[in-house]
Length: 370
Image: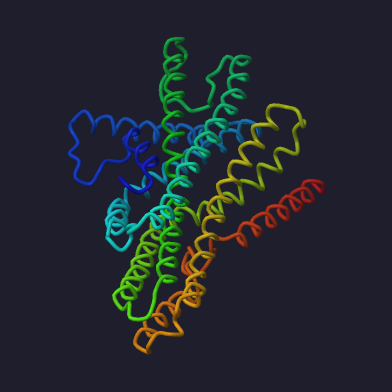
């Protein structure tokens, strides 16, 4: 896959993705089934721990945090699998000649955003690994003292045998490794696709600035390229909106509850540390979505400016007509939202922070009166 190569390579190693014309053998199919089934089974055991067993508030909080995180990954796997055709269609449309670089300057524009997407993937992978390591350190420390498994899950079999318990602990480690790889790939994919579209918008603006009188073919290409960008944006929006918008509400609720829970612990305790790391990780994911969604909106609004920087004064009326079409289409800019609601931009991110602060203050007031 030429688009977001690191993301799709990681998903391919995890068994979640396979190329369009790739034929899967029996071994690959079984490997793919094992990875996906293991992640779903682990999410089920985490949810069963919350529902079927009586826990104190600390155990309930830890189990609920992990269960929600793994069910979030499961939901993303299902969403990604259901939109496989859209992903393939996006890759095809980005291979059209209008979306490819024609010279070194245009190649530099596209390469800039490819490098940014790779750095984003590496950054989030390192952040996810550090978060997972923090969780394991906190949970293993408790497990050594309580002689239980590192991650608290409900087992549908008897794990009193020491060998069975070791096998279950190894299974937890393996599933967590796969979960980190899948989470990092699917988590950075929306932002990576936003960057791909932003790069195409900058390329479109660069070509518009170079337009001159008599270049009717170039104007038609710019209009076609702009229409292609909008079509790709619609497909990307259909893929990510089913995951990102629910995640925004989930993140808001989770940040509020985790900060409220963290306020009950000592500042230098391990419980306070892993809850804060978890909250910052979620806040970081929301910021990534909102930041690159805002970049997409900002870059799309530069198209009218690029038209004014071209030689439109010296063009004849039919040529200006093409530029007028581009200006009308780019008047509102491109934004990712759910039917115009909850747009992914920095205003939404600030709203989440304000809402979290208000909710935590309200929880403290309610708790003080009880």
